[in-house]
Image (cartoon, rainbow, N blue to C red):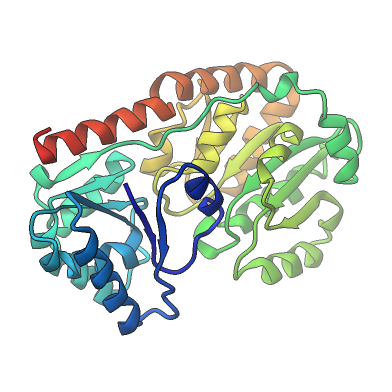
Length: 335
């Protein structure tokens, strides 16, 4: 096995090298970087892999464009989202490269359906859901009081949490509206937002404009964001489109109930009234109503969270994901 990173090593670089897996960093400097394409091509000529497995648009494109120099390799590409964000030229390129694709792996049925509609034949499509390690349930952790103090929140705070990119797709403003409406009658309600992105400044301005800044915390990007799950009472995701949300899976694995937008990828994770609740996209009132229910019905959140944790443990484990990829590789190579 060898790992090739187009731009930089990223947060997993140390783990990869510690495991004695060779890591090559190509150093791609811009969206269209011909020199990085030729560096990748030379590396593939040298390696002559049996399988080339790429992830996300840039790597999927570069890898398939280089496929001719590794004629014996099986080409596997992975897509992680219902990619309605892609520009016309990106979708055009995806279509042109179908002929160089032995298998496209989506992390949810809705992602697979999106690429089937784009023209990828069904026999070249595979669904392998993301896998998540199951953590200790947050209800049993001892550090919640310390985290609330760190967040400058009162001990009786009911915390709705979000971890993700602050971008239009995530519809974070819908969550802020829900908090602003409900906190008028349930003053213990607070929203903690972890992540950064192009909408952060606008969202902070909006929060101040509706005088809700005392009930909303912007923490920015955190390398240890997962530790704040212990401070959350519920995880919220209002996105207009997703793939299979790792944030939702991590929250469920930690024993948190989830309120999410009613889109296909979220329906694959959240079972309404069993592991959480689903609201129509843009329905701030729906989020508010379900938040109020969790506040007013003690024990409901813990019940939903326990069911969500069990769902992740049985259906979305890391081992199940690894087994799925191992099976795929054996099928493609005949080993």
